[in-house]
Structure formats: structure tokens, C-alpha cells
Image 1: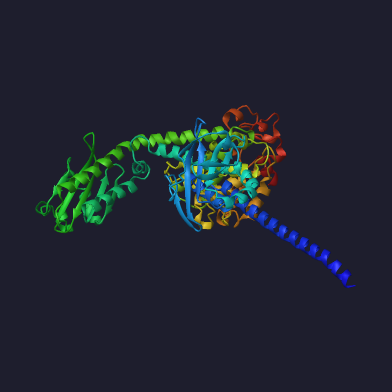
Image 2: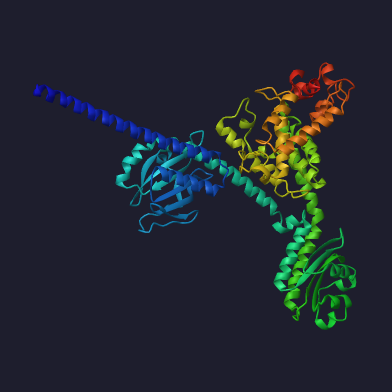
Length: 598
């Protein structure tokens, strides 16, 4: 009996060991799967993010450090000729948990035996994930590949020590699968970085600095900036700048009475810089009454024409020096130069704005479904802005921003934009960059208001779940909140190649449902009220607006349509040109469904 029990015990023990081994294996397997999911989730965030190029490099190196902990990591990208890999970023981990970062700077190992190379000649071995040697160091080279599987760069991490090689083998499949996603994440930031550089170059047009560019569209801010620096640099007690044309006056530390008296004393402005000591100031009653003990005055002259004056004053017994006078004269020349260029650069920005509008019109015309779409959104935005009782400049600025809101789409490839169907997750992440690209393109335009914030944030959501910055509620600029409602409503009533638009009433109902979530409730209410007033003022037998006005179609399409400027409704006329602007049949046309719902 005892023998039988012993005989049974042996297989049971073996089975128990096997079961435990299998359980341990499965737990390890599940843990590793969880680790892989964490890496891919972070990778997905990297591809969708629109951070700067250097920050993107930083995040990629951090990600790889999570997979294989090494002392060094460097990113190399292929040069234009495709012959060399050029180092773009490096990072040194002095010890686990302590990081010493060095981006875009030479990095030397403290032991002196390893230093990342600045350039590497492209070799066949760089096309695959491999261990390579550099001096005494063994490095892991991870290729960066585009969608075409062509080499675009490499990431090198190391040194890899003998005890890490088994880990490298275990995670080789994961590292290899990251090859293309890593480059696509970098490529997105390269595109955005390129646009930023081009815009920066444009803003530095000629030898005019950024402050002067701003002065063309915000002269008072520019004058205040220069006056403040002049007062600080001379240790004056106050001062003012007067521009004759437009009656512009800015001041600091002086009374309204002083400004008024000085404004009417053009004889003291002179045609050359003036430094009045205490003795001379005492002879001028209004200066004496003000308590002024010293005065500097420099005229703003162009072609012997007096444009204005900059003046500083002291109330303490400290005279101005000749160096003070030279400094103020520099600011006077700076302001004069700005005034001379206002007209020229004002015209330049008008031409730039016209160019951007032409670009938008060309993009709208690429597909029948998008013809007139920017004009419609501008129209809806103005309806809302007027209902919110915004100022004339705000209304004008919102109208301009609404027309240009999709100008950043020029930076997105046509094969994505014109795709006949819904975007993939990756394609959508690329398309989302249009808001930042558009903001960069309009960043020089500050008149009638700064257009860049409106365009950058027109895809934010009132509940904070939008992009690119996840702003929430009142933190979203009012112009962007207006544009969001106008843009989404237009999208809902418009047909697309892969779906038909909602009816006018259905689109209005969807705005109500998303009020307080996607949209500012106040903006939605104002838009619904504006629509209601217009619908009530239109005869029941007529549409809200004639097709050619409401659709915003180009005249070359409208003029050939028999319904153009006709007394009859477009759906009552045969051989209309509706297909040319995206409406195959009246049942799905925004003009018809609006009329039908009334």
C-alpha cells in the first residue's frame, strides 16, 4: 500500500511543478503583453502629438529608454544626398534615475571610451536592427523607416553590456515594429518645424525687427514699448509721444494737462533734438507749473516733414546728459522709420492676406463638396459675432479668421485630403496639424485682431476634449468658440463623397444636443436665434437665401445655371448646376431642406 502511495506521489509532484511552471510562464507572458501595450499607447500619443521637434526627440529617447535601459541614446537622420546619417539629438543617462540631458550638443562619455559620432556614413547594416561596434562600445542600431520601407535615419542606444543582450533579443520584435511609427512621429514634427521656420523668415522680412512688424498693426503698443525703454534708459520721471496724423498720444508719468499744453506748443518741438536745463525750463510757464526741472525733446521728422515728437521730463534736480539725448534721438529715428513703413507694409500685409484667401479658394475648389465652404462659415460666424454684440474690429477679425480657418490644409498631402472615405487614425492625426499650420501662416496678421489664436483653437471643445491644446470653457478665445459652431454646423449640412449631409433641422438639433459639451451654450443660443430671425423674415415660398448667395459658389458656376438670379426656386428649375457644388439631388441639399422644414 505504501509503495502505491509513493508511486502516485511522484507523478502528482511532476504535474504540480508543470502546472506552476505554466502559470508562471503565462503570468510573465501577460506582464510582457501589458508592457507592450503600454509602449504602443505611448507611441500612439507620440504620433498624435504636435510638440516641437526637439521635444519629440526627447520623448522618443525616453520611450526607448523604457524598453532598454542604456547609458546613451542618439538620433540620426538621413541627409539630403542620402549618403550620411547626421546626429540630431543625444541623451546621457549618468545612472539609473539620474539623467543629464544634452540635446544637439557634443556628448563625451566620462570614461573617455565612447562618444556619439556627429555623422555616420550610410551602410547596408543600418537598414536592419543590429548590434554594431564603435570603438570599445557595442551599440544597438534601430532603423527609422518611412512608409516606403526606405531608410530615413537610425537611433543608436548603448553601450550594450553582456548582461543586457538577452533582453535585446527578447525585445527585438517590439523594437523592429517601432521602426516606421518612430520615423512618422519625427516626420510630423519636421513638417511643422519647417512651416514655423518659413513663417519666422517671413516675419523677419528685410531688416525690420519683430517689434516694428507689430507696430504696423498696433502702433500704440509699439510707441508705449519704445517710450518705456527710453524712460528707463535715461532714468526720467516721465514722457510722451505725440503723432500728428491720427492724433495718437501715448504717455507715462505725466498729467493730462501737461499732454494738452505740450501738444499745443509745437514751437518747442523744433526740427532737431533739444535738451532744456532747469534755467531754460523755468522760462516756460506750463513746464514750471508742472514741476519739470529738465526736458528732452526729439522731433519725428521725415523728408523735412514734422510727424510728431518724443519728449522726456525730470522733476528731480538731475539734468539730462548728452548721452541721454543721443539715446532718445535713436528712439525718435526708430519711431520715424516705423511710421514711414506703415503704408508700405500695410499694403504688403493686404497682399499677403489676399494671397492666403486665394489659396483657400483654390483648396475649396478641389472638390465639388467643398466649393464655397469657407464663405459659408465666414457668413455664419458673422451672424453669431453680431448677435454677441462684439466690436466692429472683433466681428471683422472673426470673419477673416473664419474664411482662412482651413488655410493650414495646404500643408497636408492631397492623397490624405482627397481620400474618398473616412480617415484612418494616423491620417486623422496628420490632418489635425492644419490648425497649428494655419495659425503659423496668419501669425503676421494682427489687424483688425490677432487671427492666429482663433484659427489655432477652432477645434477645441467647450468641455476640454478638443485639440490641439485641450483648452476648456472661457479659456478658448471667443472668436474660436464662434468659429467652432459655424464650422461644425456647415459640416453637418454639407454632403461629402462618403456620406450625405443632415437636413437643416437635424443639424440645428445636433447643435442643441452638443451645447455645453462641444460648444459654448451662449454661442449656440445666439446662432439659433440668428437663424430663427432670418427664417421668420423670409416668405415661406422662398429659401433662406438664394442658392448662389447661401452656398457661396464661384461666379463661373453660378452664371451658367438657369436658376441664377431667377424668380424661381432652384429646385423648380431643370438642368441646374447643383452637382458642380456637391449636391446630386435636392433631397440632400441644405437650401432645399431648410425651405422644406419651414
